[in-house]
Length: 319
Image 1 (cartoon, rainbow, N blue to C red):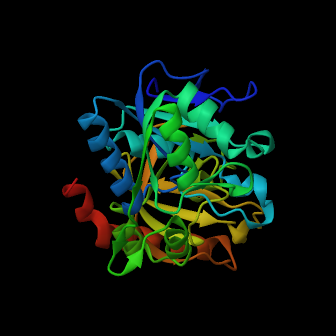
Image 2 (cartoon, helix red, strand yellow; image 1 turned 45 degrees about the vertical axis):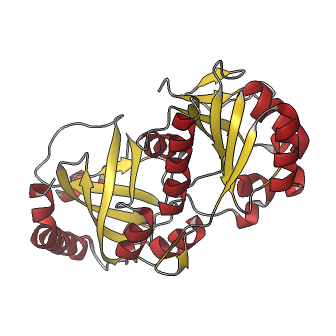
Protein backbone atom coordinates (compact mmCIF):
# COMPACT_ATOMS: atom_id res chain seq x y z
CA UNK A 1 0.00 0.00 0.00
CA UNK A 2 2.05 2.94 -1.27
CA UNK A 3 -0.13 5.41 0.61
CA UNK A 4 0.68 3.70 3.92
CA UNK A 5 4.17 3.89 5.38
CA UNK A 6 5.98 3.27 8.63
CA UNK A 7 8.22 6.03 9.98
CA UNK A 8 11.72 4.84 10.79
CA UNK A 9 12.25 5.35 14.51
CA UNK A 10 15.55 3.89 15.78
CA UNK A 11 15.61 1.46 12.81
CA UNK A 12 12.21 0.05 13.78
CA UNK A 13 9.24 -0.05 11.43
CA UNK A 14 6.04 -2.04 11.15
CA UNK A 15 6.43 -5.26 9.19
CA UNK A 16 5.08 -5.18 5.65
CA UNK A 17 5.20 -1.40 5.20
CA UNK A 18 7.74 0.82 3.46
CA UNK A 19 10.15 2.16 6.07
CA UNK A 20 10.83 5.86 5.44
CA UNK A 21 12.71 8.64 7.19
CA UNK A 22 10.02 11.22 6.44
CA UNK A 23 7.70 12.83 3.89
CA UNK A 24 8.72 15.06 0.99
CA UNK A 25 5.72 17.37 0.63
CA UNK A 26 4.11 19.74 3.13
CA UNK A 27 1.20 18.19 5.01
CA UNK A 28 -1.85 18.80 7.13
CA UNK A 29 -1.74 16.21 9.90
CA UNK A 30 -3.86 14.72 12.64
CA UNK A 31 -2.51 12.36 15.28
CA UNK A 32 -4.05 9.49 17.24
CA UNK A 33 -4.41 5.75 17.70
CA UNK A 34 -7.75 5.74 15.81
CA UNK A 35 -8.64 2.16 16.74
CA UNK A 36 -11.94 1.29 15.06
CA UNK A 37 -12.37 4.56 13.11
CA UNK A 38 -15.70 5.45 14.73
CA UNK A 39 -17.89 8.48 14.01
CA UNK A 40 -15.76 10.72 16.22
CA UNK A 41 -12.65 9.73 14.28
CA UNK A 42 -14.48 10.21 10.99
CA UNK A 43 -15.54 13.71 12.01
CA UNK A 44 -11.92 14.62 12.82
CA UNK A 45 -10.49 13.04 9.65
CA UNK A 46 -13.05 14.66 7.35
CA UNK A 47 -12.25 18.03 8.91
CA UNK A 48 -8.57 17.31 8.23
CA UNK A 49 -9.25 16.57 4.56
CA UNK A 50 -11.29 19.77 4.16
CA UNK A 51 -8.66 21.87 5.95
CA UNK A 52 -5.81 20.41 3.89
CA UNK A 53 -7.55 21.26 0.63
CA UNK A 54 -8.31 24.83 1.68
CA UNK A 55 -4.62 25.32 2.58
CA UNK A 56 -3.15 23.62 -0.47
CA UNK A 57 -1.57 20.84 1.63
CA UNK A 58 -1.49 17.06 1.46
CA UNK A 59 -3.51 15.27 4.14
CA UNK A 60 -1.84 12.78 6.48
CA UNK A 61 -2.95 10.73 9.50
CA UNK A 62 -0.24 9.75 11.97
CA UNK A 63 -1.08 6.68 14.06
CA UNK A 64 0.62 4.17 16.34
CA UNK A 65 0.76 0.39 16.50
CA UNK A 66 0.52 -1.58 18.68
CA UNK A 67 -1.82 0.24 21.03
CA UNK A 68 0.30 2.28 23.46
CA UNK A 69 -1.37 0.53 26.43
CA UNK A 70 0.25 -2.74 25.35
CA UNK A 71 3.64 -1.17 26.06
CA UNK A 72 2.82 1.24 28.88
CA UNK A 73 0.46 -0.95 30.93
CA UNK A 74 0.29 -4.51 29.48
CA UNK A 75 -2.14 -5.76 32.13
CA UNK A 76 -4.65 -3.10 31.03
CA UNK A 77 -4.22 -3.27 27.26
CA UNK A 78 -7.59 -3.20 25.47
CA UNK A 79 -8.90 -5.72 23.01
CA UNK A 80 -8.26 -4.83 19.38
CA UNK A 81 -10.85 -3.34 17.06
CA UNK A 82 -8.53 -3.07 14.04
CA UNK A 83 -5.02 -4.04 13.04
CA UNK A 84 -2.96 -1.36 11.31
CA UNK A 85 -3.85 -2.44 7.77
CA UNK A 86 -7.58 -2.41 8.52
CA UNK A 87 -7.18 0.97 10.17
CA UNK A 88 -5.32 2.37 7.15
CA UNK A 89 -7.94 1.01 4.75
CA UNK A 90 -10.72 2.81 6.63
CA UNK A 91 -8.74 6.06 6.87
CA UNK A 92 -7.87 6.13 3.16
CA UNK A 93 -11.52 5.54 2.27
CA UNK A 94 -12.27 8.93 3.86
CA UNK A 95 -10.08 10.76 1.35
CA UNK A 96 -6.81 10.99 3.29
CA UNK A 97 -3.75 10.93 1.04
CA UNK A 98 -1.19 9.34 3.36
CA UNK A 99 -1.25 7.22 6.53
CA UNK A 100 1.94 7.05 8.59
CA UNK A 101 2.45 4.55 11.41
CA UNK A 102 5.00 4.61 14.19
CA UNK A 103 5.98 1.35 15.85
CA UNK A 104 5.08 2.14 19.45
CA UNK A 105 7.69 0.54 21.72
CA UNK A 106 9.45 1.38 25.00
CA UNK A 107 12.02 3.58 23.23
CA UNK A 108 9.38 5.66 21.46
CA UNK A 109 7.39 5.95 24.71
CA UNK A 110 10.33 7.93 26.16
CA UNK A 111 10.30 10.60 23.41
CA UNK A 112 9.70 13.98 25.06
CA UNK A 113 6.79 16.15 23.94
CA UNK A 114 8.89 18.93 22.44
CA UNK A 115 11.10 16.45 20.55
CA UNK A 116 8.00 14.79 19.12
CA UNK A 117 6.77 18.12 17.77
CA UNK A 118 10.13 19.34 16.50
CA UNK A 119 11.61 16.18 15.02
CA UNK A 120 8.64 14.08 13.96
CA UNK A 121 5.72 16.43 13.34
CA UNK A 122 7.61 19.42 11.95
CA UNK A 123 10.92 18.17 10.47
CA UNK A 124 10.15 14.65 9.28
CA UNK A 125 6.46 14.90 8.40
CA UNK A 126 6.70 18.52 7.18
CA UNK A 127 3.60 19.56 9.06
CA UNK A 128 2.19 23.00 8.28
CA UNK A 129 -1.23 22.43 9.87
CA UNK A 130 -1.92 20.18 12.87
CA UNK A 131 -5.48 19.19 13.80
CA UNK A 132 -5.97 17.47 17.16
CA UNK A 133 -8.72 16.62 19.62
CA UNK A 134 -9.63 19.12 22.32
CA UNK A 135 -7.99 16.96 25.04
CA UNK A 136 -4.91 15.79 23.11
CA UNK A 137 -1.90 14.76 25.20
CA UNK A 138 1.41 13.52 23.82
CA UNK A 139 5.02 12.75 24.59
CA UNK A 140 6.70 11.08 27.54
CA UNK A 141 4.14 10.40 30.31
CA UNK A 142 1.66 12.54 28.34
CA UNK A 143 3.52 15.67 29.37
CA UNK A 144 2.55 17.60 26.23
CA UNK A 145 -0.78 19.32 25.75
CA UNK A 146 -2.46 21.51 23.16
CA UNK A 147 -1.09 24.81 24.45
CA UNK A 148 2.50 23.57 24.12
CA UNK A 149 1.75 22.47 20.54
CA UNK A 150 0.29 25.88 19.68
CA UNK A 151 3.23 27.73 21.26
CA UNK A 152 5.87 25.63 19.51
CA UNK A 153 3.91 25.55 16.26
CA UNK A 154 3.97 29.32 16.16
CA UNK A 155 7.76 29.28 16.49
CA UNK A 156 8.34 26.51 13.94
CA UNK A 157 5.77 27.58 11.39
CA UNK A 158 2.80 25.26 11.66
CA UNK A 159 -0.77 26.09 12.64
CA UNK A 160 -2.50 24.09 15.40
CA UNK A 161 -6.28 23.75 15.56
CA UNK A 162 -8.41 21.75 17.99
CA UNK A 163 -11.59 19.91 17.07
CA UNK A 164 -14.60 19.83 19.36
CA UNK A 165 -15.74 16.51 20.86
CA UNK A 166 -18.25 14.56 18.77
CA UNK A 167 -21.50 13.35 20.35
CA UNK A 168 -24.25 11.11 19.04
CA UNK A 169 -27.52 10.65 20.95
CA UNK A 170 -25.91 12.27 23.97
CA UNK A 171 -22.96 9.85 23.98
CA UNK A 172 -19.36 11.01 23.64
CA UNK A 173 -18.18 8.40 21.15
CA UNK A 174 -15.03 6.50 22.10
CA UNK A 175 -13.26 3.30 21.10
CA UNK A 176 -13.63 2.15 24.72
CA UNK A 177 -17.42 2.37 24.51
CA UNK A 178 -17.53 0.52 21.18
CA UNK A 179 -15.28 -2.23 22.58
CA UNK A 180 -17.76 -2.68 25.41
CA UNK A 181 -20.72 -2.89 23.02
CA UNK A 182 -19.03 -5.52 20.83
CA UNK A 183 -17.87 -7.52 23.83
CA UNK A 184 -21.48 -7.67 25.01
CA UNK A 185 -22.76 -8.76 21.61
CA UNK A 186 -24.61 -5.47 21.06
CA UNK A 187 -23.65 -5.25 17.39
CA UNK A 188 -26.39 -2.96 16.16
CA UNK A 189 -25.53 -0.31 18.76
CA UNK A 190 -21.84 -0.57 17.90
CA UNK A 191 -22.67 -0.14 14.22
CA UNK A 192 -24.48 3.12 15.03
CA UNK A 193 -21.33 4.62 16.56
CA UNK A 194 -18.91 3.15 14.03
CA UNK A 195 -20.90 4.52 11.11
CA UNK A 196 -20.83 1.10 9.42
CA UNK A 197 -20.98 -2.57 10.28
CA UNK A 198 -17.95 -3.85 12.13
CA UNK A 199 -15.51 -5.72 9.88
CA UNK A 200 -11.99 -7.07 9.84
CA UNK A 201 -9.67 -8.22 7.06
CA UNK A 202 -7.38 -11.05 8.14
CA UNK A 203 -5.33 -13.82 6.56
CA UNK A 204 -6.79 -17.32 6.26
CA UNK A 205 -4.45 -19.76 8.01
CA UNK A 206 -4.28 -23.52 8.36
CA UNK A 207 -6.59 -24.97 11.00
CA UNK A 208 -6.97 -28.39 12.58
CA UNK A 209 -9.31 -29.60 9.83
CA UNK A 210 -12.12 -30.54 12.23
CA UNK A 211 -14.74 -28.60 10.25
CA UNK A 212 -14.07 -30.62 7.12
CA UNK A 213 -14.28 -33.84 9.11
CA UNK A 214 -17.70 -32.76 10.37
CA UNK A 215 -18.88 -31.94 6.86
CA UNK A 216 -18.71 -28.17 7.36
CA UNK A 217 -15.25 -26.94 6.33
CA UNK A 218 -14.11 -23.73 7.99
CA UNK A 219 -11.57 -21.04 7.26
CA UNK A 220 -9.53 -19.98 10.28
CA UNK A 221 -8.41 -16.35 10.46
CA UNK A 222 -5.01 -15.55 11.92
CA UNK A 223 -4.34 -12.81 14.46
CA UNK A 224 -7.83 -12.89 15.97
CA UNK A 225 -7.06 -13.95 19.54
CA UNK A 226 -7.60 -10.42 20.92
CA UNK A 227 -10.69 -9.21 19.07
CA UNK A 228 -13.35 -7.28 20.98
CA UNK A 229 -16.08 -9.77 20.12
CA UNK A 230 -18.32 -11.69 22.48
CA UNK A 231 -17.54 -15.39 22.31
CA UNK A 232 -20.17 -17.08 20.21
CA UNK A 233 -21.68 -17.63 16.77
CA UNK A 234 -22.20 -14.85 14.21
CA UNK A 235 -23.75 -14.33 10.82
CA UNK A 236 -21.06 -12.86 8.57
CA UNK A 237 -20.67 -11.54 5.05
CA UNK A 238 -17.31 -12.30 3.43
CA UNK A 239 -15.75 -10.21 0.65
CA UNK A 240 -19.10 -8.41 0.28
CA UNK A 241 -20.63 -11.39 -1.53
CA UNK A 242 -20.65 -14.62 0.51
CA UNK A 243 -22.86 -15.40 3.48
CA UNK A 244 -21.30 -17.37 6.30
CA UNK A 245 -21.53 -18.63 9.87
CA UNK A 246 -18.58 -17.76 12.11
CA UNK A 247 -17.59 -18.88 15.57
CA UNK A 248 -15.38 -16.78 17.82
CA UNK A 249 -13.94 -18.37 20.92
CA UNK A 250 -12.12 -21.32 22.38
CA UNK A 251 -14.09 -24.17 20.71
CA UNK A 252 -14.80 -25.79 24.12
CA UNK A 253 -16.15 -29.03 22.64
CA UNK A 254 -12.58 -29.70 21.51
CA UNK A 255 -10.92 -28.12 24.58
CA UNK A 256 -9.40 -25.25 22.63
CA UNK A 257 -6.96 -23.07 24.56
CA UNK A 258 -6.71 -19.97 22.37
CA UNK A 259 -9.46 -17.82 20.92
CA UNK A 260 -9.82 -17.90 17.16
CA UNK A 261 -12.32 -16.79 14.54
CA UNK A 262 -13.34 -19.55 12.14
CA UNK A 263 -16.04 -19.32 9.50
CA UNK A 264 -18.03 -21.63 7.28
CA UNK A 265 -19.06 -20.02 4.00
CA UNK A 266 -22.39 -21.09 2.53
CA UNK A 267 -22.37 -22.37 -1.05
CA UNK A 268 -18.61 -21.87 -1.34
CA UNK A 269 -15.91 -24.46 -2.14
CA UNK A 270 -12.82 -22.51 -3.23
CA UNK A 271 -9.42 -22.73 -1.53
CA UNK A 272 -8.76 -19.38 0.14
CA UNK A 273 -5.87 -20.27 2.43
CA UNK A 274 -3.31 -17.47 2.51
CA UNK A 275 -5.81 -14.83 1.34
CA UNK A 276 -6.67 -11.73 3.39
CA UNK A 277 -10.45 -11.87 3.56
CA UNK A 278 -12.85 -9.14 4.59
CA UNK A 279 -15.33 -10.43 7.18
CA UNK A 280 -18.30 -8.23 8.03
CA UNK A 281 -20.35 -9.09 11.13
CA UNK A 282 -24.08 -9.02 10.45
CA UNK A 283 -25.52 -10.31 13.70
CA UNK A 284 -24.90 -12.27 16.89
CA UNK A 285 -26.64 -15.66 16.83
CA UNK A 286 -25.84 -17.38 20.13
CA UNK A 287 -23.19 -17.83 22.81
CA UNK A 288 -20.41 -20.37 22.44
CA UNK A 289 -20.95 -23.52 24.51
CA UNK A 290 -19.56 -27.00 25.01
CA UNK A 291 -21.52 -29.87 23.50
CA UNK A 292 -21.76 -33.34 24.98
CA UNK A 293 -20.97 -35.05 21.67
CA UNK A 294 -19.83 -34.34 18.13
CA UNK A 295 -23.29 -35.37 16.91
CA UNK A 296 -24.92 -32.72 19.10
CA UNK A 297 -22.48 -30.13 17.77
CA UNK A 298 -23.30 -31.04 14.15
CA UNK A 299 -27.03 -30.69 14.82
CA UNK A 300 -26.42 -27.24 16.30
CA UNK A 301 -24.28 -26.22 13.32
CA UNK A 302 -27.16 -27.17 11.03
CA UNK A 303 -29.52 -25.03 13.13
CA UNK A 304 -27.10 -22.10 13.04
CA UNK A 305 -26.80 -22.31 9.26
CA UNK A 306 -30.57 -22.42 8.91
CA UNK A 307 -30.94 -19.39 11.20
CA UNK A 308 -28.40 -17.38 9.23
CA UNK A 309 -30.04 -18.27 5.93
CA UNK A 310 -33.52 -17.36 7.19
CA UNK A 311 -32.53 -14.02 8.68
CA UNK A 312 -29.69 -12.77 6.51
CA UNK A 313 -30.08 -14.30 3.03
CA UNK A 314 -31.62 -11.05 1.81
CA UNK A 315 -28.45 -9.22 2.87
CA UNK A 316 -26.61 -10.56 -0.19
CA UNK A 317 -29.37 -9.35 -2.49
CA UNK A 318 -28.95 -5.82 -1.11
CA UNK A 319 -25.16 -5.82 -1.62
